[in-house]
Length: 158
Figure (cartoon, rainbow, N blue to C red):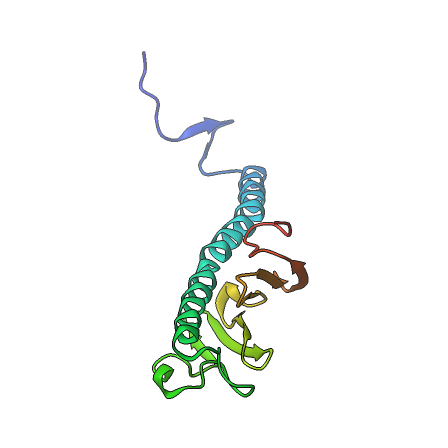
């Protein structure tokens, strides 16, 4: 068996490299893979950022309930947790990470709604709420208005 030389001879000429059609096929395959993979990756990153809002809303809800136990209201008509005893956490609006949290009282301080609005990165275009009854809602999902009665993450239904 003869050893093959790295240069192939075709009609007396040495040929090296790829043909134009081979390069075009590789570019087309890479383009197709990128068209599929990039949107999936972006959605994966977005879904990974949303639990930050859920954690923040749950944390503020717990603090509001503790505040209610001490004061028999959730705050004044002007502000949630308006008492100076809550001054370490009640400076709404609060921006932490990728979300901004706001709070509004209702029923003369006997109710509240906390809202988390996406402020940066892939969280932008998402708005979630929780109220004094523990009702969760999504009012904006992937930039579109929503009326879901849960916190949406991957699809537009609960």
